Amino acid sequence: MAVVTSESHSQKLKALTEISKLELIEVMAQRMQNALDRVITAMKTGAVDIEINTLSHSDRLFMLEVLEYESIASVLGQLTKEEKVLLRRLKSKRMFAQQVKNDGGVLTAKQAQELLSVTRQTMKSWREEGRLLALSMDNKFVYPTFQFTATDQNSDRGIVKGVGQLLKILKEKQLSDRMEYSFFLSVRNEPIQGICDGQQPYTIAQLLKVGVPNEALTELERLAKLYGTADQA
Image (tube, rainbow, N blue to C red; front, side, top):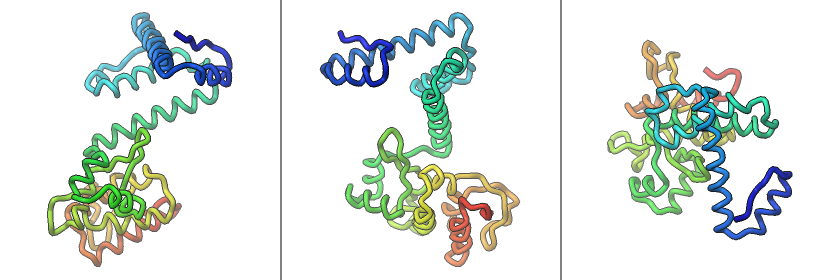
């Protein structure tokens, strides 16, 4: 089996291009085993203090958290600048994925397509036009569940009324998908004229689910236009 050693990054890439797919899988498996062995050793020696509540998470999320703990506790001082950036990105992705899960989760493209009874091309068009909010996760598009509804009186072909209007405004601002998501799901408490008095915390998604009169939707459009600026409400 080909072995990846500690030579330079360019040398590693050159070596990897010269091995077969099966050998590459074996190399990847060995590298993963190396990382796992390092984590287990750190846990046994007490170098890593894992919080007990991580055991309630899925296997995938648990592994990400353990790797994060081990990296911070054991080798943070030895990481290169690039590796530190990657570690921060990993933590950010993990936290965002957990937030999305807490907010109700997502549907795969296929699930959303079947729910809305539309073609794959229609899904692509609606995503690009800003009619549907899509998040890019692991190089795939997924669709937050908050925007779907089975209630005819508040539905625009299966999508909560108002989502499309607001999302198109956000698209024009060229925000990231996370920023778009945050607009709908961030908890707010400021009053919105004609919609709520702000006495109870709420999200834009919750307001849209209940139903917003057309005349009041103008106020949400104003918020969308200000979103991401110093003047946002």
